Length: 325
Image (cartoon, rainbow, N blue to C red; front, side):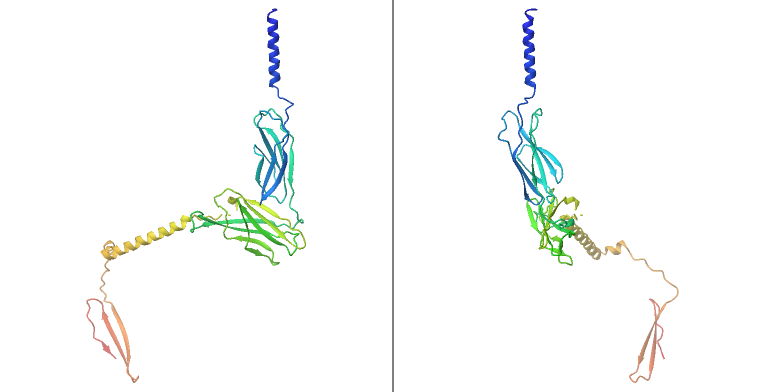
């Protein structure tokens, strides 16, 4: 018993030490990122950027970041990068928060949040456009193999109720990295732009990118508030015509015409039509049919009129004597 007592104490001490080692180290705290900024880098596109906290204690822990989008639409995700690009509307402003999180050790508590905001663009209330609608039309492009489809874009909108009469609107679209300003507008009775037409665009009808449309304006009486919207291509009325459809129809039509022409020539050369469809003889009639031809002749004096009636009997009949009156 005396010998086993020290061994038991040693085993108990080792167990306590092991349990202490397994407990999370509460002194190791994760610090929030620093220099968090939000910047608009394109139409309906922002760049979120931050830096790791230089005061963060270095340990064998992989760090990541939890990003939460607060406005205009809530969203959250995790990343190990220190920057993030987001596609979103910006006329309502944009705000987000970020915190440091342990990437591979969930026993550690995440850091506190840091936030940044991109304010809504200035402008008088009610001056931005309303009811923006856009449609694309896709048709075959037979001039190049690199872009077999040609996509046109047509957008319409209504003038804001608070917009002055001298308001003029201007539309831009962005697809991928390409941005283009509208050059063909339709106007209302006050010569304000209310519709836009792009006969050719850089939109890829098979792409997955969202179409960003941005409309701003100008006026001497008020600041015009801009408006932007995102469209999914599959959701705006694509009338797609595949490039091979037109040529396929032409080829089928030409082939049918060629076959009919060859068949017609063979029939005429070999009298095939007569052999396939011989004429049916008509039944003979016992009643003789006559055709009467009446000719009128006048003399030069116009006083004497001679009527000649000719009776012509059908095949095999005799010709009757002409009678002159």
